[in-house]
Amino acid sequence: MMLVTTISRWAGVFGACLLAATGAMLTYEVVARYFFVKPTIWAAELSQLCLIWGCLLAMAWVLNMRRHITVNAVTDLLPPAAQRLCVVLSMLAVIVFSVIVTIWGWDIFHDSFVRGRTTGSLLDLPSWVAELSVPVGFTLLTAQALVELASLRHGDIASLGSSHE
Image (cartoon, rainbow, N blue to C red; front, top):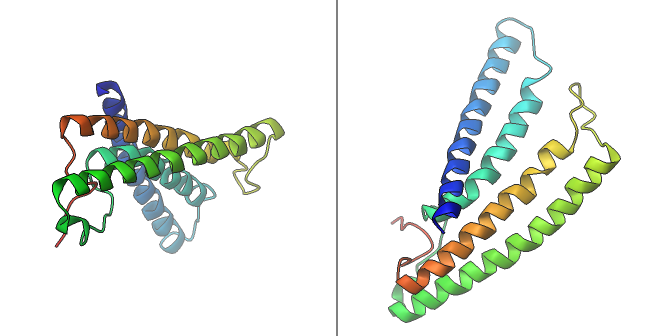
């Protein structure tokens, strides 16, 4: 269980770095385009790639940190046993959804990889580079959700997310 959480955290940190790189690339593109009238052919596509990978890699870490958006107006009024049941049902829903997305995402990635699809843009990157982020990200999310579900036996989880009032 510790290994999964450690992998999730490192994936989240790497995802955050990719999001920072996205901002840097787009800033560079704006400066190049509007101040030097020399737009790049790479900034938009690579920043989209970093954005996709960054968000999907961070999902498991965000779950572990309890930072997913939750609506707990009703569940906060429930007794602790009912709140725990809501967390169990939510984790099961996350696991089922993530497994389905992982399987379908893998099929899409594999089809693009075998067929050699490309983005058709100026960089003409292989499509599978972006598509692989879906099965990777959702596999991490599935594993982390299983860890969170298992930790319920020890009473570690009070809710799915942080409370914002």
